Amino acid sequence: MDEKINNFVKWYESLEPEKKRDVREEFLRRSGLRYPTWFYKIKKKSFQPLEMQLLEDITGQTYLRT
Image (tube, rainbow, N blue to C red; front, side, top):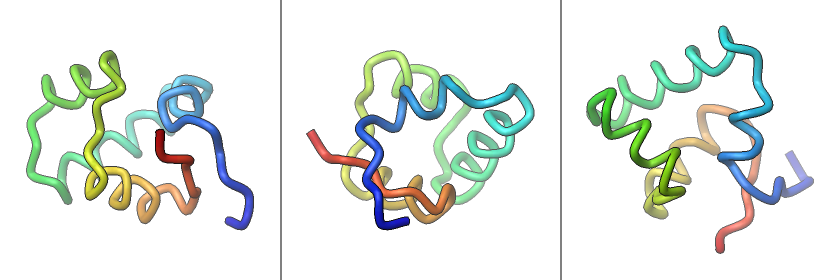
């Protein structure tokens, strides 16, 4: 977890479909956001700081903030 990954979306897009689903479903469950919102955020790369913090908690990775 020491290494920071440049971009969550690039990391997410490199995952196998099953792992993508697991990350997405856990994020939606814990954030309370809806399914279409997830895909909008992926497409626009528009995650807010607290959402990024949640993604880091879910994935065990650290992402650079731009």
